[in-house]
Length: 384
Length: 108
Image (cartoon, rainbow over all chains, first blue to last red; front, side, top):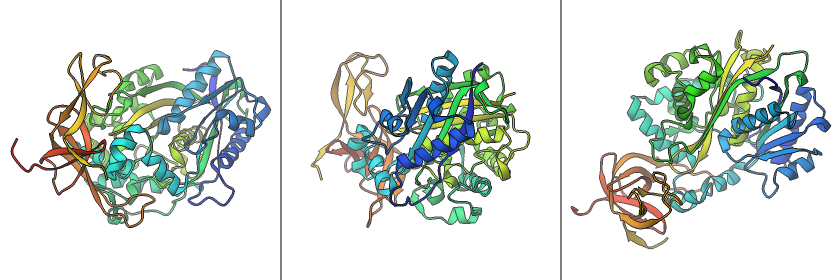
């Protein structure tokens, strides 16, 4: 448990499928920063550190954003870990605040690539993708995770409708999130009737690319607004390149640290009140939940048909990226953390989970070749 | 389109003999720094997908890709040039540095 550091504010920009002229990743990030500073009741002039992650800032770098935001800093990080960047940046910030070097610290994630820009990112994600995948017409991450999903279905006896339980359940949660881009309830029949994108993945298995941004403020707990409890982090762990891309992709880097995470947090998987699981694809939601030891006996099919279908364990209560949209993996992962904070502080309005005290959040990303190579997870608790 | 060459290049660690694809800088098993290029000629299809839509592309024609366990080395993702399905033994070839596969035309 971090004794001094806590999450003291969260904020987000509007999410949109089609940005207006003049809206860029930087303007979305500014809007998220303004919202987070207001939420934390912190003046911009008090910010001592900043971390940012984005696919669409180039050629600007973190210091350019600091300049444009009018921030003079003693600590600056630019994170490049995609869907796990939010958890990575949170870990960096917590350790820095705890050490006393800088506080408060602003974490920012945001993107506005547009569809054409996203296609370029997907085809040029790294040199391996450029040389060995894009020439196949592999379809970007959709093609990569289609193969992982096929493997998962075979290994665990999953039906297509098992993934549908995730998409349908998260859409129900999204109805209570005014910032989600898709809020209309979806039936299983609609899910199953959706056109295939990359077999076995169909339309509602793939996150909608949107523009938007998220921001979080980390500081000493006494810097938190007095009107509500800060959110503390009992434990946080990260993994990078856990198996050298030589596994089956069905175990994420979370599997490398899950036992240590729970031990350091001093709680058990069964103690969790809600989970924010990085949901680039339903397949990877299940892989991460399984890695977290939340699925008894690794019976993923049963878990889908009972716990997820009945929403016994609240998962991705903001609708997840599948319904709220993916403003790049960086901000998408940050939204899951922000949602957990709102839930633990009793501020989630129509989607509030009753008596939520303990949450697990994850990040997963960087599809280096056959699946993602970065992962992180944290156990969040309502402070006093 | 690049010219087709038989087999797919892999990198074999001169210290431990492990075969890798894509090319590493240090061996992930023994951290040896030296590799020789080798060629793997066949593998077994484990999973396939049909890419039916490609973001940002109009008039896209569906393409097939596969996860392949190679006969002499690593797992790789290949473009499939025919209707080979899971369990099929395929021959491997490459265009430029991109790996492809199709049903074997003769017995090894």
